[in-house]
Length: 418
Image (cartoon, rainbow, N blue to C red; front, top):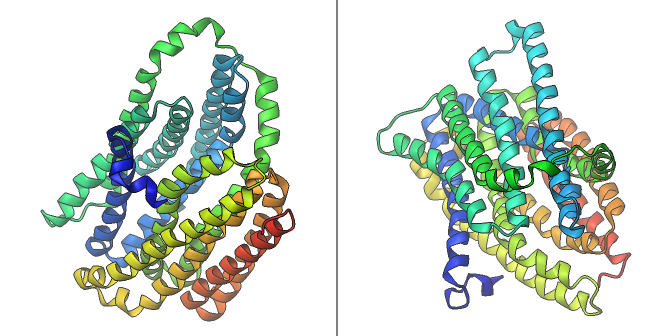
């Protein structure tokens, strides 16, 4: 991994794209940190639950259909326009159905929701635009429009978050949840328009080929359901514990738990944005090589170094963050951070074995292992949180991490991993 970050071996274009990708993630970490100081833990807990729900909704809206559609578009260079039109037609249909369900729910339970109609509209539009922009980003990367993808990614996340961070840090303002959601929605919708404008010429040039292929959609839904079940199970492991803490322990403890959970998830964000982006494609290319285990040994060492580095940096950073934050309640629960960061490091390290299974096309094995871990996580999180409080939640996450790394390692060894 280190070789990819040495400027002498990196041209300006790649460094620019790396910066455009990393800076929004860095400011997102900074933004959540300053919010934890500006907001009362109870309000911060409410906001993190909202952002968690939005994150989960993105996966629900997409049904992991991109795993099928992008592969079909890239591997089979025929009827590309038709496939893409069918894909986004499916997404728009899902948006419409989701809107109807949301409207019906609001109409039936308006008095018990706890949010104004205005905020609900913000939330729905954020969910749709987040998913749309994510799918557009994936498509742009697939077609090697990397600079365009990263510029729009930078604009969508960095711009409004740095603006609010400055308001909090410099002007000592504490933005309301409603205002945060409003500005988030505005920048997302602008990015949607920019994505459409950037695709306007290809759409016009291929307008006559834009036809709906129901067989493509049907086949894709069947295949993508396998990926979707696995993704949903993984996201349950990452985020379900916040809802359990909220249910048993209330918003205030949820705010504290979410603060430390967000810090621990920095490991996953780093691994996904930097390590996987550079290393995984090279591993996939060598998937049929007789020396695949040798490549994996090298990758495993590099991967472990990266995890150790990011964990060390987070441990060093937590103490000045808590000092600057100056909120006793966060310091009282510092043990949460150390348990969660160790568990997060284990889950991310288990990706070494997951990648091996993925390259060997053991999709069903991956699904079964993930579902087993997901069920284990659901049971232990509810039981231990009920019995031990937030300490039990952390121990459940750690237990799930150990379970996942064990299952993935055993599964990969069964198919030849050394």
